[in-house]
Length: 251
Ligand code: CIR
Image (cartoon, rainbow, N blue to C red; front, side, top):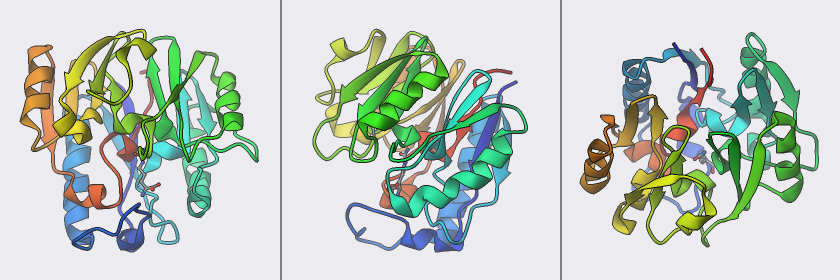
């Protein structure tokens, strides 16, 4: 049984960071309903889910993925690229320290967990506006092969265009990053469904954003059991699915 950590949606979520002001403001109540559906999907995938309290002073604190990268028995607590998000890490460190050795990234390194994609013994990391070369260098503490990847223009995080599907396969949006950059088989997401390239795989289960039929068909054809969840509100804050949890990768 794997453990998954999430963080609840604070009332301040309506002022979360976003690259563009959304056409319709964030509906915090709806965001909470969608977050509950997400946590239920994690449980349906077989995870034991713990929801930490979000922080009012940190509107983006529900995007817990960005605050730590976990490999086996070790967690690297990040120094998020957005200064407004740095206060998010303390509570996550306390929670993770119950099970893991927690190592803290040191300034001036910055890294968001959304830039990190583990596939087998390799950790792919996006060179993004949030993750700097010093942050990438400090990933060495996790003991995996680290491969830095350039992102297409305007992409926030590596996992906006791809996500892991176990130890030898990834989900990858067409026309984003060349498949040769990855030592993995690919399940393709059509360019018109790029948002759906961010999905949470746990064993044979995948949590997908609802409303992306071609991606769901491709994943089902690849043998996965799908759990579709709504994402309209996190999307307004440039969030998606992996960003809402940290899955501890050992039982
Ligand atoms: C941010 O800009 O940091 C948040 N509003 C969204 C973070 C999403 N994180 C992720 O996809 N890993």
